[in-house]
Image 1 (cartoon, rainbow, N blue to C red):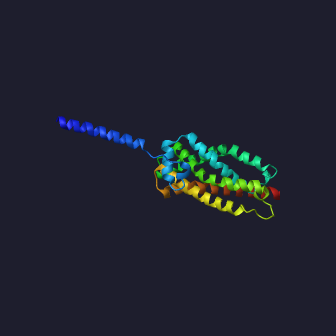
Image 2 (cartoon, rainbow, N blue to C red):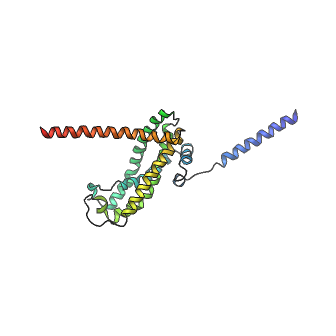
Image 3 (cartoon, rainbow, N blue to C red):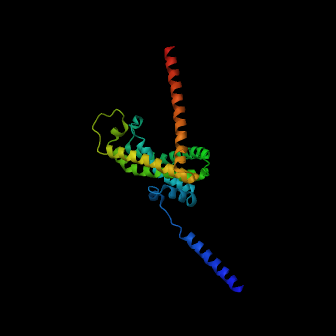
Length: 231
């Protein structure tokens, strides 16, 4: 009887030490790197290990590239200095990141419930911040374009020769946008604990609904404008 007690005592101690070792040896990840190939694992790491503040840091950096890419054909910025525009992108990146991710998290949190998703709003907010990571790649492309040839970037009526950075920037934008969407599917699937297809429709369905609403609104405004013009 005494031997059995000793066995259970030492066995329990060994298991506790083993579990402690497992917790201590939990691998750390660099979300800026791991999200490219392991979006689900990185999303889980963000949800379990990282704070909202870290998520905002990721968005603040990633949205610089996103805003810079959005400067294309923005003719109302043509009078501003390129360096001032770059500074404004840095300043407004955290604001745009928080607002954009907050809305995306709310939509995917609500529509994920249709597929019995279990993720919380906080889980989705932290996880979806990872979708900004690919846009960091765009920063050097659009910064070079903005500094070397601001007219070709900002002026939709530009008729001169395109700079060498044009095609690399466009190609990078296409790849980054696609990969950011792939990451968002993985994040929603992991946060809600649903399949990738369910996560895809969690994102796709509200997108279609918003498109229809905007189309109807545009049609109503167009008909109203035509009616007023004929009066």
